[in-house]
Image (cartoon, rainbow, N blue to C red; front, side, top):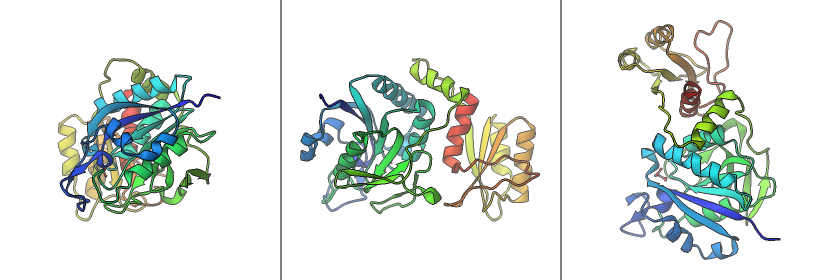
Length: 316
Ligand code: SIN
C-alpha cells in the first residue's frame, strides 16, 4: 500500500535558528533556516516516507501574530482534508508553542495528527536537538490512530490542552502538569499513556473553524492578561478599561485569590461588560470554584490558554 504523505509546515523558532559559533546555544537568531534546508540536513528523513514541505512563516515565536495563526489554521485545514495526507508536523518556536497548539486544537479539532515540534538549541549547535525532535514528530504523525494537536519535544508527547513550557534552557522544556504526558517516543516507537486530545466541541468552535477556512480576516477581540502579586493594584485594569478592552484574564495567586484592590477593579470591569476569567499563576493545579465566586474560573486552563479560549469565544 502506498504510504501517505506527512506535511511539514515551517514557522521558524530556534529549531531553525543560527548562531555564529557551534558552541553558542543561546546567542543565536531564531528562524533563519528554511524548512527545505532543515529537513535536508537530517539524513534519517530519507526513511521517513513521503513528505511535503511548506514554509508558512519564518518568525521567532515571541512575535507570533493572529495573521500567522489564521494562515496556519487555513493550511492545516487544507492539508487535513486531503486523502493523500496522513498527518501534519509543524516546526515552531518553543516560547509560544503552547498557545499555537491550543489555538489549532480549538479551531481545527483534527481527526488526524497535527504535531508541533521545536528545539531548545539552534540548528547550528554542536549537538542540536531539532533533528531528533523532528524524527520523533514524524513517528507520532505516522502512528496508527493518532489524532488531535500534540507537541513533541525531548522524546515526550504532550496534549495541546495541557502542554506548557516550564524551562528556559533545558532540552526537556515542556510539561503537561498534573495530567502528565500523553506518551513517549522511544527509538521511533510511540508508547501511549493517555488518549489523544479531543473535545473543545461546540458552536463557537465550529464558527471559528469556518472563519479559519475563509480568506477573510476576523477582527480579533482585545483580551489582555493581568497578574496578582504582593501590592497589586487596579491600575492596569483601569488603564485597559480606558482603552476599551473586551476581555481580561487574571493570573491569580494560589486557588484564584486576588488582592482586594485588583479584585475591585476586575469586578468593576465585569460590571461594565468586560468578560473576566480567573486562572492561576501556579504551575500545577487549577482554580477550584467555590460557592459565591463572583469571577468565573478558567476551568483548568493556564492564563495564556484561557486568553486564547476567551478570544475565540468573543470572536464567535
Ligand atoms: C522561539 O520561540 O521562536 C524562540 C525560542 C525557541 O524556539 O526555543
